[in-house]
Image 1 (cartoon, rainbow, N blue to C red):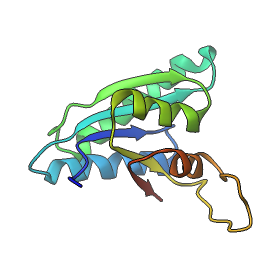
Image 2 (tube, rainbow, N blue to C red; image 1 turned 135 degrees about the vertical axis):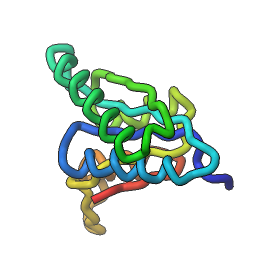
Image 3 (cartoon, rainbow, N blue to C red; image 1 turned 45 degrees about the vertical axis):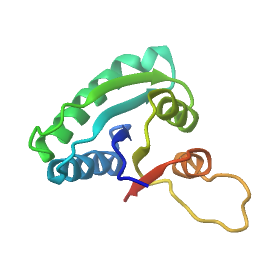
Length: 133
């Protein structure tokens, strides 16, 4: 298995999601072989798409600031349920690494269902997943 080269960073502008964006920028800046990076914001409906566009622009700034502008990220806004949309977007783009914030991440061995967006991605994405908290 080679080091992931096609990253999807999913953010909603929250504290932990923004931390994931910054950590991805920092990591990308120290790699010799630069990854292809897409920053994704998922809007819940068409009416929130404009807000999502603002969040993805701010995420680009955070990523480039931490990454010393060593990688130019692609920006993506999609509409739908967050977990499903993140996994589908990663698969559509051929991504081998998803980076996300993990404020809703929880382990519950008594619960057979995912406990949030992070757990949904873990259960449904076949690739490297980095959860930052």
